[in-house]
Image (cartoon, rainbow, N blue to C red; front, top):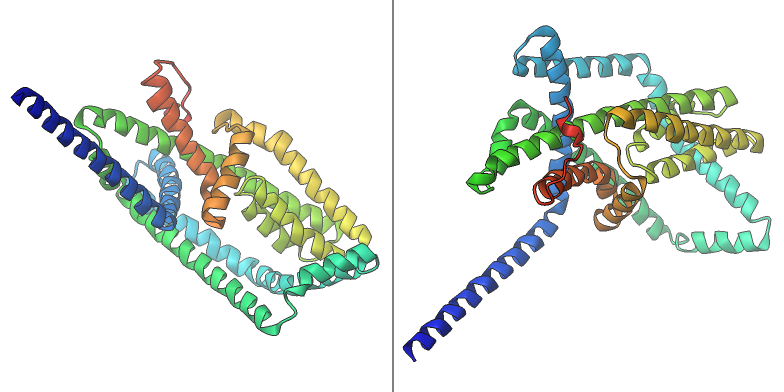
Length: 351
């Protein structure tokens, strides 16, 4: 009788313990969900730190400087060209960006004019603009836009500052993460984190090459066919190319609207330039880059981008692909290698 009571008491204690663990995990998940925006900004800082450390590693190998001094050289070397570019093309670019809003507005008005020529088009225009007839709603939309722009600038500053701090002393943060892992798995945790950093560096280099090529090709193509503000449109297209699938589609909108302010022939040529650049990227640039960088299944990239955009908005879409890189490295090393015992190719561990 006493043994049965003892067993029942032990089961009760075990049940209470498991219940508390589950509640703690649920509370932790809710907390992480609440601070998801801050965590994504921190991940952006990690990305920038990986970029800085990668460049600093190259500088250190060439100059035999210590890593800290190589990092200083990299930061100065990044700032100097930006300042020089600002001096040389900054006024022209700033002028074009300033004109872009008015030009896009004229393009929208021209689209509206064409749509109103047909009864169905007129109904579409009425539905789209019906919610903006009230001046207060329009002012509210403008205010929301500027608040969003201010938030984006603040987020960018946070990412850059956090990235510099992470890059200056990465071991501090790596060891902080490793300390959360059981002692017998800490060595493996360091290997995984090192592989994640290597994979992110390869992905960043490949992405930078693609963004630069897309931006330059778009600007040159639009300039050749006579689209106004080609430099600004090329810059926007290159930056938006950081977000797969969604970024190029968004970039096409101002290109076509600006081209429409000229004439329909220019609109056609602009569309052909956009399609040609996307074909070059998809069929030439991306395969070449993925030969030595990180190869990601396009379907997974698309699903991850849409899912993170729905969950976390724009910032989720921006960081969806590099987060997918992290997940793939962890799955390969922690599941396929450690659990299944398979030998897999992990990009971050390449020599």
